[in-house]
Image (cartoon, rainbow, N blue to C red; front, side, top):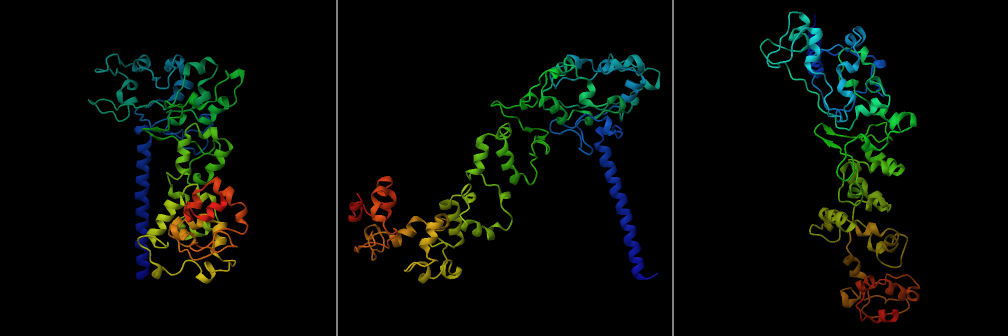
Amino acid sequence: MSAADSSNDRYGLLAVLLACVLAALLGSMTEARAQGGAHVDVVAQADRPPGSRPGDGGPSPVIFPPQRLTIRFDHQKHVKGLGVPCTACHDKAKTSKKSADSLLPPATRCDACHGSDHRAAEVVNAGGEAIGACAFCHVGYREGRPVERLDLPAPNLRFNHALHLERGMDCQDCHGRVENVKLATADQLPRMRACLECHQNPTPAKGEPSGACTTCHLSEKGGMLKTQFASGQMLPPDWLHDSGHGPDWIERHKRVAGDESRFCANCHSERFCTACHDGRVRPRRVHPNDWISMHPVAARQNDPTCTSCHRQQSFCLECHQRSGVTLSGPVSNLAGRGRFHPPPSVWTDGPRGRSHHAWEAERNINACVSCHTERDCAVCHATGPVGGRGQSAGLFRDTQRHGQGANPHPRGFRDRCGSALRANARPCLVCHEPADPSLRECR
């Protein structure tokens, strides 16, 4: 045998051993998940509750927290084999009005058939038959030790069993064909799909059930649904208005909210939405990973979605100052970073060409203010008395005034400057002092 063949055999053996170890681990995990150790048989889809789907994983573990079943109980044998009706054991369902009510029968209910005596919980008499022995029903029982605790947490919802039974509903309508199931687990609990068949399509024959979410779901003081529980966060399922909060929800939510905003309002206040859309909360998942290198293209397109979250004179400007790409800022590095705009002969000097900064400012001033403060513009455009360079044309292109900066106004502005001044004098005072003769002409 060659060295290569020997090496392949060793790798093959290791692969087999690894597969066995993984199988053992998965088996132990499956057993650990099997309702506290009780053996669970696979239930046929036809016997599962209405609204269930193959491979759905059962009902929501947030609404129905995980159970710990430490008993063996064969529903099929008791219901079909012995003819015991559901209400013989679960008689409290006929009067139960709260989902937190325990509908399990007392242990004394079993004594008549099993020959045991549970009247004194501290000293249980197992009787003389095998079916009365503690280990016959209690999983993991050891002589002389207490039985393992059965844990069925209360569901996080409202439900009135008595009302549903009064209106003609059967146990199978919510829990499926339990008479064909041996150990009934959380998988036999109701599905929301089946609930909505009545609650979203009320008819007099079914008692006109309310379709409001708070009919079944718990709510906060303000009326919105409670979504945070010890068992996790309640989220809508994928099939409900296509509102599954998966990885692509940040992209899809606008369509769902646009179609029916009242549906979103069941769980979210308007403040929750505006926190993102006003920019107070900035989820990082909105942009792709390389957005830092791609965002200039979107910003120069004057995309209004940028300003729905970001403010140019705070978020954009501060970042650009820190990175040294602005005219101002503590770490400005003009020589090291190179030129951002075209040369002065194209960008700032006259006459105006197609690439002159005046056209860019008129087209998309948002792109300018992401790097420049108002003072950067005033350096060239303001008059001398307010700190400008003041050696260019006057306010109107047909006049020359000493001390005026580069005139930013279009031709014919003199005819409408009065209305602009009366509407908002602040932009005028950035470049002109109040006693400027040009302003007096406009007044």
